[in-house]
Length: 499
Image 1 (spheres, rainbow, N blue to C red):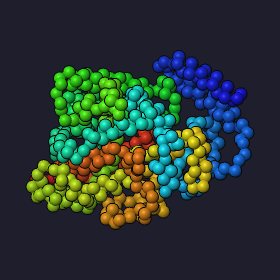
Image 2: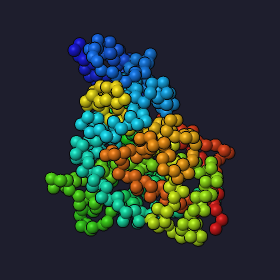
Image 3: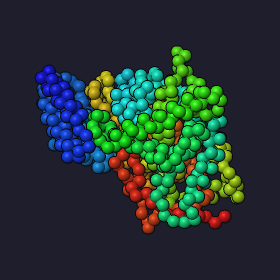
Image 4: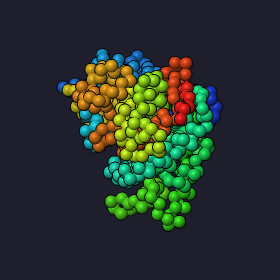
């Protein structure tokens, strides 16, 4: 009781201190230091309290000599290496501390627990709301009870159907050709920057509708980038009231984009026109109790839809670098375009896109080596059992697609880009959850099919336009500073193909 009283007093003191901090960098640094030292001391007090002995067996715990911060620095520098080393030393289930929180990772088949769990036991909102609510806004996604969120997902899913995908292929191909005209015939450019912008444009064209797409310019694109900057390790681990520049940018961008969407929603409502797009789907949608979505809910869902699609820009870029490094596979993909679509390469159709099996295998292999998200998380609200261990209430239970996709006991030549491995029925030796780029079970991403359509259409178009090569043989290293692992210094060399 004494330690909890100290904790509450210190939290209030820290909050009051940071609340008075403005733009003075020295003050920010001092306040951050004060927070770390204070919470480190309090954590030490809390952890030093005697534990009740019982017969339960807890996961192996990775010790750290750094109070409070724990393994935050080593994990932040190279999370994949950290997790792989822990897997080799401790096995598929282990725990460690970062910034006062305890994380338990489930690797390999032990991921079953997370994907088959009930939300009441392993809760998503307790973990993700601190990340998503400042970005999407209140009243949507993880800011609402899970049954409401499931209804919202179902509303969005009705707008992601094959009939619309057929139209999306035409839209994405046209946007891609128009965007890359600025690249000219040859040169070296930042591929990730270009594809990040293109994916905002194509996702908005396909998912938002013409009114919102027409408002997209460089300023709005920067607002999206500032919003996306809210998905960082800092936002995951640190209190939301800290006056970090990325938090301030995120909050300003959220309000500005919301205001843009409000005007479009209100204009569409007043016009009475019935356009076949997701905006109209959401305007017409109702919950099970008959209540329609508010403008605030629609705006938040539109933001979530776009940023979920935006996270595929990393995978789309990595695919380009894998193809640039493997010239033979790249030329096979180009030949496949002609074999499937015709020697004169007419405009793509959805049916042809489905037949581009080599391109799809390349995308699958890219998703294996560079999945859109590194870690999926839940909060344990009740004790859980995995591999014979009891995971206590309060642990953040995590699964890493990136690590599962390259476990040495599941994948042969695990670090190599080998699209043809998917010609076999069991490329991962039948291991459960060895391939989960979009999650699994009830937690599977609803945008998976759209992502395949978007990325395959973009790369079909780019392979028809250009031949790609690494710039001076450089293959990008991984930038671990964001929760989406982007390519570092992603410059690619290109040359227009002769007709």
